[in-house]
Image (cartoon, rainbow, N blue to C red; front, side, top):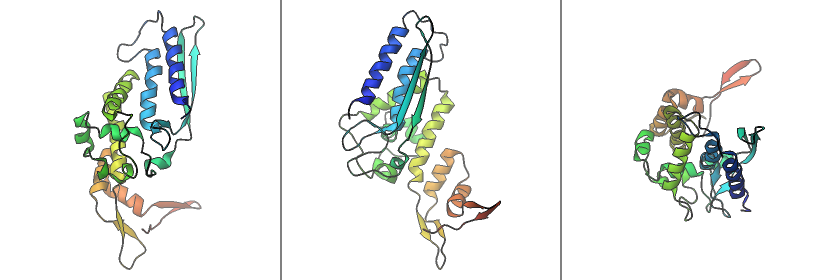
Length: 234
């Protein structure tokens, strides 16, 4: 909550704006380099920022940004390295916190076609992974943020298929969290209680549902130079 995220955005916007003076746009299918550098933030924040107890838009990862300038002072390139993403937040959140923004952006129903494509409802409480803590944030308009994220993908040069792939993987995670297992009678072996969530998750990831369930219940483990199948219990 010290202002690192916001100040970083302001500095990037400043460098990009002064370096853009007199720049010529070369590729009409995507934004200028200056636009891309600025629009990287909404995309990164959608998947890497979340509400915590102290900050409504907390970066749950570290990033190192390099901006390169040519001899004329114009931007020549940029790259961003990310570190230590808080992966555990995807599956668990404290009561006063929230999962990553992208889940709630999609469920905002600002783009209803996404709900249909991802086989989901707009009710976050239908999905275990994203409803353990808060589901709304007073200072954040998830519908507007979804449009900003979607626009950022376009500026960054994502194709329509690449964008849909990102959304599908996000939807698959929501369904994945709804998978339930039970113990086989008289056996130390787990089996799916229902295959509906697995079917939807596998479909969105382009996998075979039976293979997904087999990989979870009977994972292959390398022992020495050989692989053995391990039975998982609940």
